[in-house]
Image (tube, rainbow, N blue to C red; front, side, top):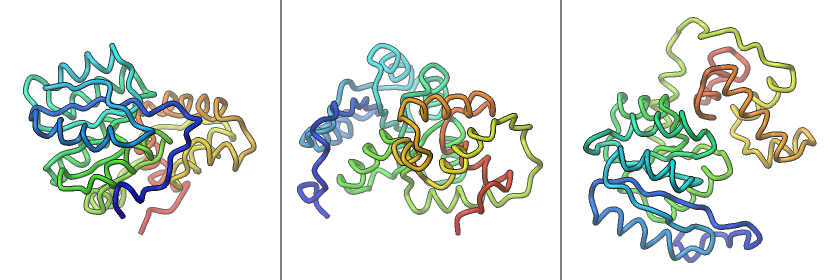
Length: 227
């Protein structure tokens, strides 16, 4: 599928505000060029290192950050953790050249919702941005395999959830891959109410991303691990 063949965006929604973080100018310009040809995505800033990414996320309040992991001054994993600590509503997609376990699991534990390699096709990056904006994970299949292996590793439950019955319902649906709008339809709630539940779940569990919440749900036996 080419960029021109991607489904038309909902023109009633404001454009998705994206921050690019990469220390290579040519990479930032290349990603900006194909994101900006879409009607529903706009690049609002570019960061050359992790420190700039954290500051620009603070100043510009992006919806999504495309984050390189190997950058000077502050690496992408540390920058991801710093941004998520300040802005849970900003979703982060790792866009990197690394596929080793330390980078994949490190980025996801820091709060990244997506993980793509830099050789991904433009339409896949666009889909990942749209998915992240909906609160849905988008992982390179190799990164997903790393995550499954991590989830399958035996370990004791991390903490008592202290979730309400409704929060547990929402957590299960998050772990099944549903976005906020889908959860709202499933449970007959408003989108804003679902956002409140998601925020409460992350806060109670001491987590920073939906991906971490999904891993927690698997480890606690609320949903089966993906095959």
